[in-house]
Length: 212
Image (cartoon, rainbow, N blue to C red; front, side):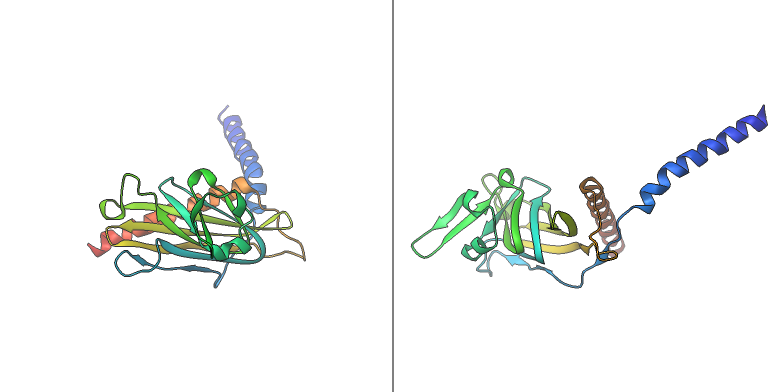
């Protein structure tokens, strides 16, 4: 009887391994990008900007931008009209005879661009102005070409009474294999991004504890 139970456990483990192995074997291959994502600090008393500047460059790709929270909006200057395919549907931030500038609230997201996206992340300060709150957010960029996901990037935003800073959490690409694009599942990518964010936050916490 014990032998039968042992055999049953081995067989069950084998079935589970067989079920899980294809998933791990089929996981996309990703690689770090050396550049293509640019971030900057924002100081309320020293900057001509109104928010934190972030740029994403994925040549030849459609770029989809979203945020994880509903605390901030994207500010787009007049030069983004050339790249933002949602430009006509976005609310006007300001307008004069020389230029029209737009903004994208959380309800307007995702926002799509071609080749590059240059935005400023601005705190929605209807109730909590810059100087009265600390807010964290993540900007997620997903690049697609010919219907395939070819890369992604994640930027961490944190604001305080001084303005705001940003950091690149991930900047990845999915290289072609045998001359073909990899088939990257969006659900898998969402999980991968969340894993990277969790790992980043854990590392930041450990770093803070060591510093103290």
